[in-house]
Figure: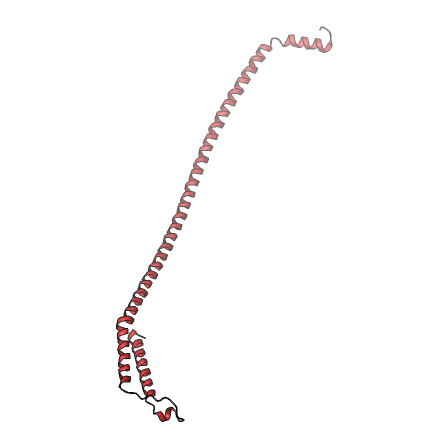
Length: 180
């Protein structure tokens, strides 16, 4: 129902109520009480003035009080609806920003993991190169030590070769316990 329809129907209801009361007041006294002793109200011109006064008050109150209050209530309703839509928009905006933030975090994590894997591979490669370098140095040093040991063994053999006869003689004498 529209605004005017509701208010006109209320107005008509008020008028019908007044007309009903006026009509009830005009019921003949014989119908009001058959036993006597009842109060009889005879409408005169003051009832018409009261009806006009009532209609004027309805019009004046509507003009001075009800319309401004309805206008304020309508403005508040519109303001609340505007605030609700702003809240909904803000909520959607926050949800979109949270989703974008979550996507950015996932992307950053994925990128970080890729960089970490690349750094790990690079570190493993560097470690492998260093181990190979150390192994090659160790093998070279081992080979150098083996050459030195061979050389020392050869020199010791050469120096001990002439003395083999003397050592053999001494060992034989110790084993046999006599001179040979």
